[in-house]
Length: 615
Image (cartoon, rainbow, N blue to C red; front, side, top):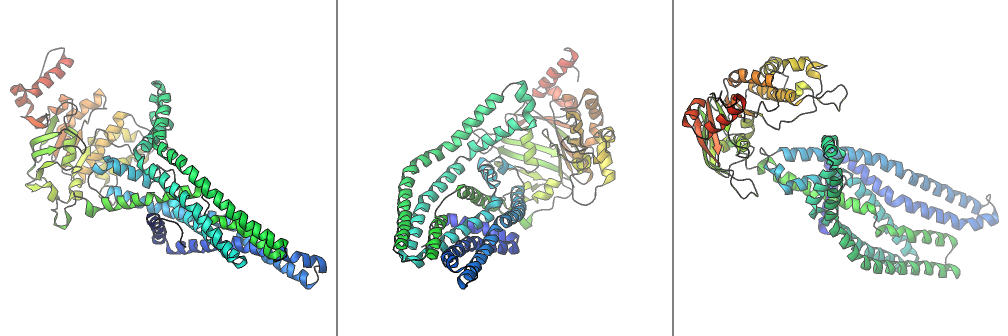
């Protein structure tokens, strides 16, 4: 008879073991040795102690100096050795588990980082199915670490083999008793195993509400939102919402537990009957002196030892939670590998070094977000001349930042194409093209790294170009900022680390601008500034305006801003409205046109001039 595992479940176990083997073959063999010890040592100890118990009457009658006494002492010594070795299993398992877990954590995290970083775009990081898989592969939804799976499998397999060995020993007493105990425990295992799989399946199906619950828990317990949650007083709301989503995710599991309860009760009664039959048979034969004290002591201990075949503990639930992450890990690896990325043009891709030399052309572009019901762009046409600055103007939600993601090849248009010097963007080597693009995003990232690392980000690898670094800092207006830090460029920009410090929003914006300008100094040809002065004070903003032409000189630049004092300095201004470019020209040309741009500029200027509009 085989262990009652489904093919899928067995496959996941095999994958976990194979993953450990790929990480360290020597470690896998050590785990195999632990399985053997886990299976054999407990039963050997019980058998040795039972045999020693059987020799006690003779030794008591004849004395320890007799042959019977010597036999008892030998049996006790053997039992002591087995018991001592059995006691070592616990510390050995702890030590081995820590080593296996450490190696597995590194391997699994490396696979996840490689998988999610493989696509050139970012659409997969906004896909709910991918996010569910990612959360489950990290063990977040189940609160069970996949890295612990190999040792948990080893422990469970050792226990199952130990129970099987106990049934074999019972067969030496009565063949039918060993088989009956084996079959009874398998009968218990089946519904319990089904319950476990159903419960874990419910967890997987409830990925979204559980992710929301974990997010709300993080909001309530981490410092990021602590100020707002207290000032606005929505801590109770966080608690209530967390409870709602958590219960929503777990309700199907609780329903299944109640449904399976009666069946498990019936199976448990049957197992107790078999257990009672075995104990009764042993008692009957011992009472009629058909077996000796040693055999009785051994067989009585084998009855409970056989339980490890069919009993289900929290470890079984945890193991299934760990194993359920492996299909998601494999799915992420398979679906996100570079060869599966539609953005990868393969070996025939054109090298974009130095491009654009003439222009970037958006030709009849249409775009709609996955799951969206309206188009962001419809037949959008725009030409970005090489070496010139182009400003994008439009109301919030017009799609200005989305257009930038298409240019950076973070997303692909739904229809139409982007041409760089006449070559379709899809035909360029995507990774090399992205190195040509330097961006200051509106929601730029604040890395808890040193100021130097925040700017350079190990761009292109190799040593930092100190001249380019200092030049980028000067052009971004960050030189005085860096010089004022406690340890200069080496200062960690995070108060959560010793010696670290935090920056104001305006200071961070200068660091982000320096980051993009450093990339330009290292070869990037396209500079994108998304609301570059949003967090600067008046003096810093004015300084930026004065340096704008210098900052954008020699590169193809796009500036997105609601501040027309920045926009008016661009060579050309494009108005994005209704998914199309509705106006295009210089500041003076668009004012003379008296369209949308002129209206927006006039209204903003009036707010600062008291109604005296000036161009």
